[in-house]
Amino acid sequence: MPRSKVFVPTQDGLAPVSFPRAYQQSGDRLLVSCDSEWIDQALQMAFLREGPYAVTYEERAAQDDGSDLRVTSKPMSADEVRTLLGEWGEYVESDPRHNTSVATVDGRLRVTIDEHNLFVVTGDFAPVVAHLKSRGYEEREVTLPTPHVHRDYEEFDAQAKEFVQALSALR
Image (cartoon, rainbow, N blue to C red; front, side, top):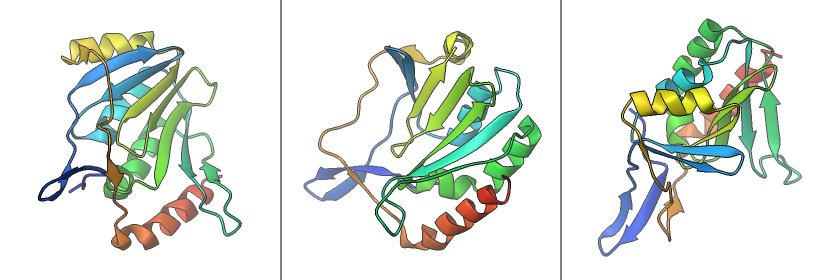
């Protein structure tokens, strides 16, 4: 079961943040929030455009020299993407060290699950807006609580490396 990535300080410690089902257009991107099933939601949005697709993993300052790590798969079918992210779902949905994207190879649409479990959608997102409206999402401001903190889970340290290796093998 996925764990919260974002917490807010309270008098009793830290409380997990739960986001409403909402979307907001901000310039050339669409911000989308929901409270669960992030991979399923991301795939529903990404698959509104025909593939092939690529999965990208980005982790800030992950290299030994402090540089960012970015790994992108080879072109994949929707079924291959669904299988890959289904296998690594708990890690992708629970660990805040990274952003994971599903994009059409032609660049028409990219859906990123960011380090807060918010979606950043770029490209031609008009069909995504129609999809969200049909699912009961509200158009309203999507914000992060301030202040907030992220929590890394030690048990995902090995999975982070394994996911990068799995994605690298698909290049």
